[in-house]
Length: 285
Image (cartoon, rainbow, N blue to C red; front, side, top):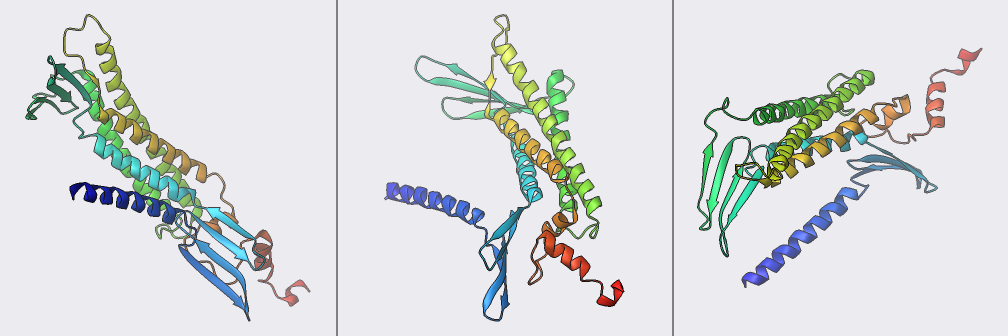
């Protein structure tokens, strides 16, 4: 019975992941249609990543929201950074007996722990900050700076989104705020990468030093989580900077989070007609 439940749980989790992926890629999260007497003249649909317009002939165009993807990447990188910081397995070492592992020693920036073969583990926090090695103190400061920079990046990106009410419809100001958010994400990535790589370089240097008298450690899972966090934040920051390069009037209209007006088609000819229709016939006399 236990094996059957495990198989059912595995199948349910797999199907849930597949359906979540399919739902994420479906383009019709919301849709709107414009009718002309009997037939549909235009149709609008979109999801979290893009908005599309389709006419009666079946031709459609889609415009993507790079800022949304960049915000998601930056947020995930910031969350993964918070997971990496308290992780105890930044570096680890094992003491082997004749057949089994007798003890495992692992450390992070805050404490040192040991586990024996019976599963009992004890942790001891580092007693004095001033007695620590200089690189550990620097890694602590860099990791805290990464968390603060990531928080500022999230706030700036949320404020600068086109769907945000903060700042009104001043898209130039919003673009600059989003660019600042991208810079914060890139700085977060650099601080994280420097801290994690510096810590890992000391581990490898001590491990391959034949004259090192202390315990030789190996790279733990916490460092790999930190590298993943830095990579996600770097990609998110670069996407935010790239999304702020081109800002013409048509892109501002397409990137807005409001539902398109009924019957409006996002083409250059339509935009030009909307500008010319503001003047009456007598205005040209």
